[in-house]
Image 1 (cartoon, rainbow, N blue to C red):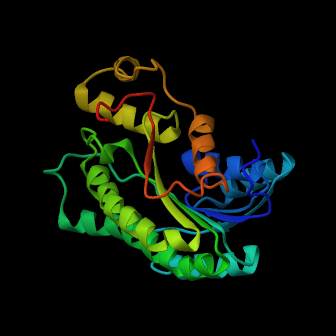
Image 2 (cartoon, helix red, strand yellow):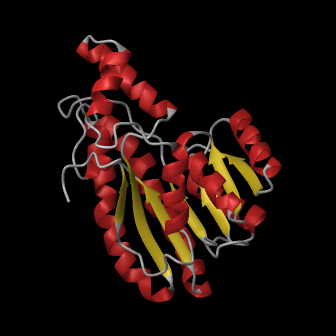
Length: 261
C-alpha cells in the first residue's frame, strides 16, 4: 500500500534506538524526509547513514529532552533542515522503574518536564503551520500502561497517562484543519528498554532474566514479544494520508496482552 506521504517531512523524537528509530525507518521507507534527534551523536550518525543507504532521506540533530532549550532548538532545526513539518512523532525515553510510594516531587517534576511539558510545547509550536497547510500528523508514543498500569513503572503510568487527556482534547480542536492526533501504545516490543526493565524486575524478584522473560511471554496471547518493525508499521500508517479519518485514538500494539477492550 502506498501511504501517500512521499515527500512529507517528519521530526521523530528520541530516535537514537528502539521504537523511535523504528518509526523513523518506516517513514523514510515511504519517502518521508525524516529528522531524527537524540543524545548520542554516534548512534544518530549511524542511523542516518543506514537510512540513506536504504534509499531514504534523513538528517539528525543532537538534542536532549531534559535541556531547557530543547523546544527552541528543535524549532530551529526543523526550519533549517526540513523547511517545515508535516509529521511529528512525540517519543520520549521511559523514566526509572519504581513503585508509587517511591515517587517524590523532585523526580516527578523532572520527568514531567521531559515527558509531558516538552511534548505539548513542541506540538503547539508546529500546529499553526500544520493547520495552515491543511495537513498534519501528530503521533505520540506512550505505553500500554495507560490502560493497565504496569507494576513497578509508577512514574511511567502516571506521566504517560497525563498525555491521554491532552491528546484527546487536542484531536477535537484540530481535526477540521486536516490535522490528526493519535497515540501508539507499545506492549512488550523487544527493544533495549525491555531488556533493561526485565533485568530490573529479575533483580527485584530474585529471579533469572530468562525466568522473568518466560513469564512475560506466557502472559501474551501471541506467545512472543513484538518486533520494532511491527510496531513501526502501525505508526507509519497512523501518519499516512489514508489515516486522515482516524484521530483521537489510542492504538495498542501488544499481541493481545491487554485485558481491557
